[in-house]
Length: 292
Image 1 (cartoon, rainbow, N blue to C red):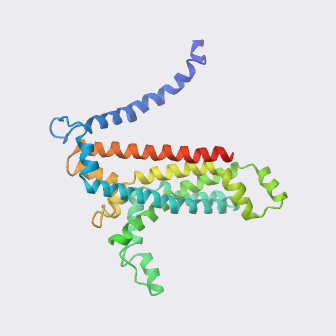
Image 2 (image 1 turned 180 degrees about the vertical axis):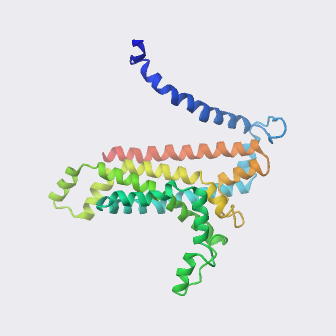
Image 3 (image 1 turned 90 degrees about the vertical axis):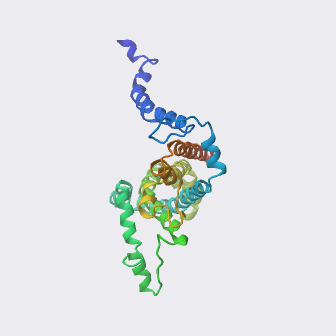
């Protein structure tokens, strides 16, 4: 049995559970979805081969799908643009605090709270009549809008809530990155006469680039796949203004029973997300290597 511990066999034995589970729960469903995307299956009758017609219709003759892609990009990019700087600022404050463990626990709560409960809670907070946001605005004489039913504020509200949901995880990641920075480097900068702002911009942030890259990629992936939050809070309204691609796919599959076309949507969204991740890794990863 000693051959089981050899360098050739042991790694494969250790990888086998992950490979088996990955094949069952990832590779097989993706392959099945790709096959179904080439059919017009409605879940009730036999699937009929359609080739790439589902993709052609989506990309050239379905304005709602293209609108959903735009809304998805706005949500993902907006939540990253708001949430990542806020998480970095709070991580700096938490790392410098004596009660960092307690603060991390508090900020981590949104990440482990059921997303449907979060959506209902924010519906109450943003309620135009009884919500705390409009009540606070009324104190200073401002008539608050109906945040979730007006075209100008619905996507903004969802973007801020999405940024809030990813805040805890990103704070934890940034805090871990900050604590991993060699203190000797910071002390050397101080001894050379650098002040706090200079250390932050020229030492801390460059050393945090690998962490920032991971946070950016994970935040954008979360935004690209957002579904339950939008389903509960706005249902894609008003006037499909918050119809993201995942919600469009859900309605295509379970309301219109166009499973084949819904699978084509899933494949397109997966490819776009993958391409975005690869581009970020190549661009920011190269920049990080150069700075290192």
